[in-house]
Length: 402
Image (cartoon, rainbow, N blue to C red; front, top):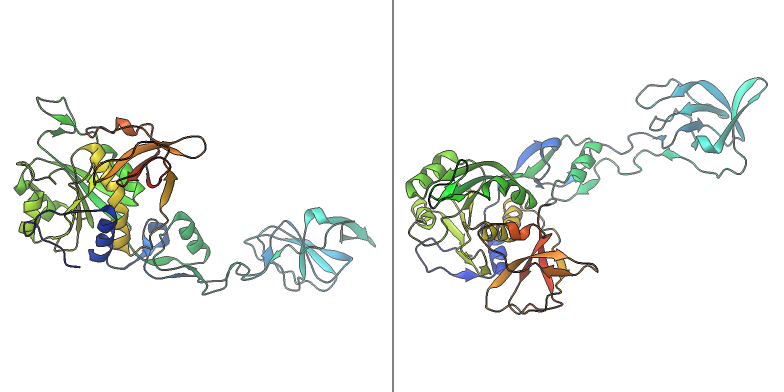
């Protein structure tokens, strides 16, 4: 698909589905790299994860009890104890047993491991023996080598997100490193002469109520924030920051996406030779959102300056950017049944805050005011409402950070 460049064609609003498809088709993915498993959570597997060793690596005891050799009914007890992580010199002959701890390797000659509650101890000719307790089930509590997986078993496919569970499984499988794309890091910049981060507000100034909490919303999209910058409305300042200060794979820029006198981003992208992937989006709020790829491969996500509009557009679009840059297999979409009676008017898809009610249905919390996020305090998600959405509609939900 050929993407438009800034200033070459008029702005075209695309529906959200088309926007996501265009992002998937047009963005160049990140380079592959090798990372220690402990540093790879949030990244995406570029190669399948295969087990380096079987699990368990050797036969071992699943419960505290006794390793026994032969059918019994009783076994002579060795004086040693086999502990997990320690060597044991015992070699069991038929009719012998040894006390064993959970996780310990079973000694050579073991035919079964019997848990404590299934065993009674006694003596024969003055020597200690163990016997199966009356009525105890015939059960072997040995974990056999390779019972969970063998060496080379594929544990996760390429395209899978490296979750905490996947990283733990990789460590269990003795995979010290994984081949991945990501994790995705983002530089965040708030633009606007009127935006003030600290200190008392002057005439016409507005408190930055979004920048400090952007890391929480980015984390919902599996993006880690590398830092927050504030820039005045200046094309030269934006150019200098983009070329000298920003080094992350993704730039999230809030403000300057419109076409007003103080909005310089689109013209700057044209000057830099950026490739525009998404020009505008047919959503309300958030329609001025744009996605571009800079000549050096970095992706810029331009968001509207109003906090609610910026959050709505971020949650709707950023996961698709993560999937495209890391070649991640998209996860399942969250859906909910909307109980509101009103039908949404107009041609644009609307994004509204919703909360879940008893019975599992979702209800809109009312119109959101874009200059602040107070309307999201009682919400669990944002709902995407295409034109014609009414009571009982099944709608896509974008979870909010809690």
